[in-house]
Length: 148
Length: 410
Ligand SMILES: Cc1ncc(COP(=O)(O)O)c(C=O)c1O
Image (cartoon, rainbow over all chains, first blue to last red):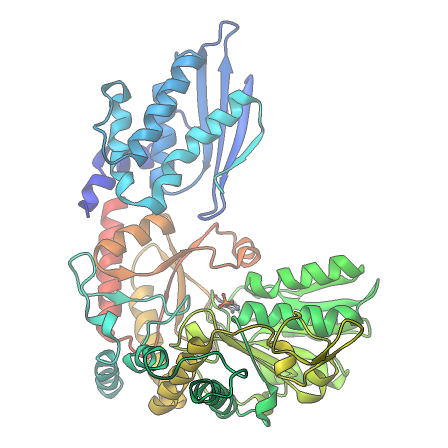
């Protein structure tokens, strides 16, 4: 069992306390609500996609545990300026990061790698992936997504 | 802490093998007995003994093993009868747990009586197991599900209950003790109010049977249920108690073997209760294990169990109240050993994970009571709950873990 510090790293505690890109984004081109019924976590992601398919702005609001809030904060930071294709690749890498113990974190993940500790806590993986599922739903044009 | 209560519980701890096992490098402080209780050696032995020495299918064979199994299984009805002071063994139906018991009553007893405009009355502090079965039968029949509100301190609004009992109410079902708040409802008074209007009542005893003496004749209910896994027995077994004359008039819940008298393709005659409601091969060793769990509790004495848990409750409440930023949800004057709480800045799931690393097991989430969470305006709570084996050290471990949580998130 890993040390608790691996999960609740300073960076995560900081993003939880001072989330980046937190707030309503008006106007926006895409939005979705994410819901984790197990914890009652609720997350809203709003973004603006350019004609060319680049994420020009992305913000979130919601209520959740430290892991989901920090994950949303770091995710929105990482997604600014990416194309949809790049964002989807990053999402796949993130999914591997938080579920696959056998792999070293992909260097492309950058500061998202601080969430690697989650893979030691299977019950908490959904907390980390909820923002990503919500982002994915938004660009797919779904309005709601649930982790159950 | 009362020294005497603590001594008894320390001795009791030795009966539970799991409590001696370290958890994440720490002494295990198991504070989730409301979800499911740990098992004493006598329960583990009873189930093993059944499989090792006398297991066979029941009610079927003429050979000795089958007779021995049947006897051991049937003897548990006597144990349950004594445990809840039921008038008659034939009123004890073995089911999978409280959930199945409630579904059985909803489908077999209540549903045939419901029509458009009729009402089923429940409360705002019910477990999903005492909500969804009633939604299913009311939706199917055009009847209405009516809910009694909960006060800010976690007590039930009994005046509203009185008002909502009316000539359209066909059935009342409510929780004896709330699994989320610990509130002990005034069951005797509430049942009397319903009975005065000839409305039958089911009392969900999932959280009362393990924690206080229960006399169902004194309570006056028509149905009572509990789950074996919360009374220190195995999971997958439980009890529905119902008044004999009601059970006798009810159609079966499921069809199959063991619940019939004679079967032909033209007509099947059903067996008498309780067999009528026990279709198919039951959890034989599980029922026997459940009996051992109830006898274990009898040995400790339910009055002693309740007194012990009250001592812990006052101690823990005092300790938790002293922690800055912590708020207890559920402060009814009559409570069992259940404390739900939230903390400023720390989400219940973070609390749960961090405490786990200290060997402290608490439940976090909605506790299968989402409407109640909505009532208190929280998505989730952390919950510490006590059992016969809980001691002051467990509470102290919880408190020091919570201090650590606060430091991390401050
Ligand atoms: C008050 C209450 N009712 C019903 C149930 C359902 O019990 P089971 O899941 O054992 O069927 C529970 C279990 O958590 C409970 O606490």
